[in-house]
Length: 141
Image (cartoon, rainbow, N blue to C red; front, side, top):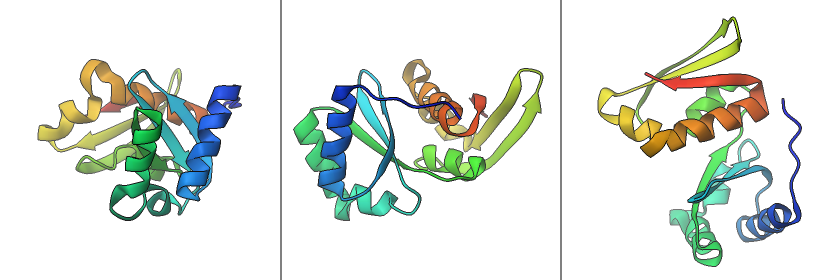
């Protein structure tokens, strides 16, 4: 696991997130178009809020898209949580020459969406898996 450190702005955003959602943020990944919060295991639903009200409130306050991912100490489950919006068929983690690699298999019709424009979703998945589970490469099949 990578040591995760936050600057003042990031800490302020995490504080706001925790006040609005009443859940615990383990991590925050900032991309140009969205904020990806990783919440404590079991707090995903609470963080999102009934009907997504917490996400909507945060989006309005921060003026960025908000994505909430529930943490799991099991790498396969964490990867499933990251790609939760897509029809996941399987998750495999294997040892390769350059470390651990994870492959997420999704329905063919959802592969492009799962990867994202300019591989944005894949980059987020790689970063989160590297930070939390020492898995350096992730691919979508």
